[in-house]
Amino acid sequence: MVTACKPERHELAEISTATLEGVDAFILTKETSCGNSPIEAATYLAKAIAEAESIFDYEQMHANVKDEVKNKTRPKAIDLLVSTGLSVAFDEGKNLDMFVCLTETGKTARYIAKFRPK
Image (cartoon, rainbow, N blue to C red; front, side):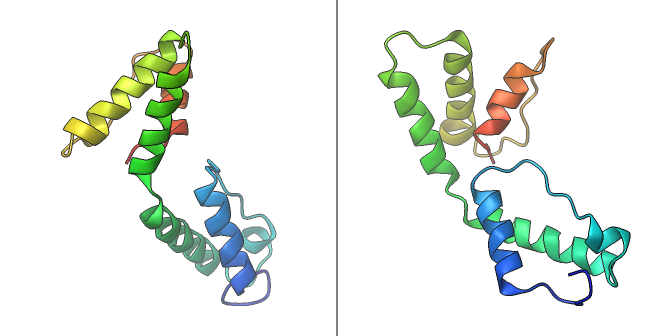
């Protein structure tokens, strides 16, 4: 979208695919630094991400995490912690708004975020 005012289909598909694969961040460089429509580019990016996230199967991801932990012969403590937290979010916490992780290194928060709880 450097010169165009709307994204092309392949650009939207790339954003959706990357979002569903778990990309944590997108960077618009030329589109916002020297493009003709920087605000529109950022707006389309946000809309494409929101649309992709709306079809992401969070419950299947949770089932995969539970199976992964269950099938390990000796799961690590962080695996058990994250699996339990996700169980609270998906099985019991229908009104759960956020996770709060007290951590010195940030590893627990990153590990939970990796599995994209709603």
